[in-house]
Length: 144
Image (tube, rainbow, N blue to C red; front, side, top):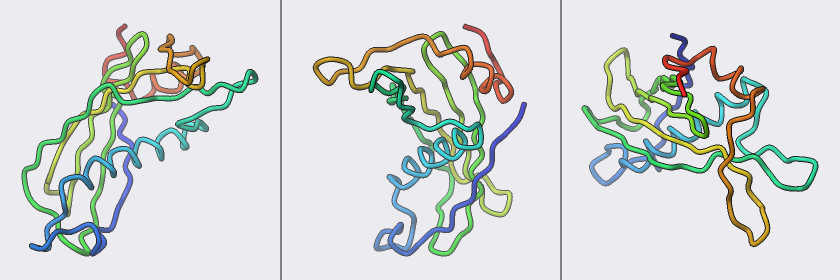
């Protein structure tokens, strides 16, 4: 199974009064890593369509479990894998490492949607085949 790896340096603004990374930053870094992964595939998290709507990927769920703290100036390796390709959704598994030690791990499930439909809502759709083929390369389980 393939893994996409991104790096982040912990900035002072990412820490709390104890000098430890505030937990909310892990969620932000998960999402930023997902966006980087999409860009490596030639995709964007919001793809404009000819009719003016967008294909987007809003969150269905997200979780993160913390095992050890990260601190200011740490360099984090963030590993993202496509855990599952569903009919209308993707599930990513994300792990955070510092010098090979796992600090946290989590999951994000996102739904493929048309954004900007009448009334400003979202409409879930089947993942387009062209997207599905790009994601399959990194998938552990490409079952529907």
